[in-house]
Image: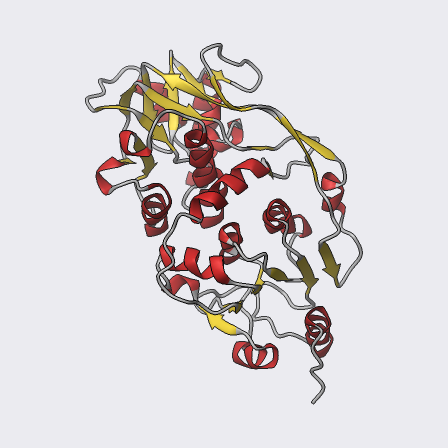
Length: 373
């Protein structure tokens, strides 16, 4: 009952907020970083085993147009928890993943409404807010935080050492370490937004993706952001040699966890890696050297964005998972030109996954290995 009441109150105050949709009403003060572009998805390197072509893939069957990517200078604004930017009394929709639904998901509409009547003491300059409703998720932080910053800094006279980054109050370690490793952002430049703060001389970068009826409400990411972040990772000094053929392990997870990992590794000459036990810079270095990646659909495959050796990818996809989720890593492989094999499994994501003889044979066929006993 309390949850229902909280939702009703949040919805009520959400209806009282003024919102500016920068995608529908561009501000003349926006500064363009990247021009509009078209991208043609080629499916010749993407292979699906276990079923016929899924419906979601049709979205990528034609040329997709991507809008220009800009940033909005914020001279006098307020940055609220959740990364919400308010300027001239209006919520900048671009700060909440350009969609009202993500503003509502933050459940802060009531505090946003009353904040106009309260004094705000803290003030910062040169802030780039990267926090949003999904930013504590590794995949979404990479695709909607790091690529966003990479684009912002790509053709800009502003240097990373001269800005502050707005991050979630409860930011996981990977947020801080990725900013340091890839952009040289130091701890004193990080602002964990736990309360509303005034921001001046700051910047609100566009998100590098679109999501609408034409995309069937899938997130379509501008490939240029993926490539720019990949370029950033090339600057990282390689400190050691890592295995070239890996199987991503998920030992701490209760779902989408593969059984008999050691046997699979022995059969296909793979090295088992537990990414949660590696520092962020080690993960980047690992993926910069890999030539074969096998893993169950999960956040670990986000690291494909740091590959340099054109690895083959075998994504193990639980049979009862929503098929359209496969578009996440498909886009990474597309932008980077990787051969990607999606293997639809018989097993359920809610239970430990065991590869059947048929599925093992399919992997062997992909790798051209004879696994007969």
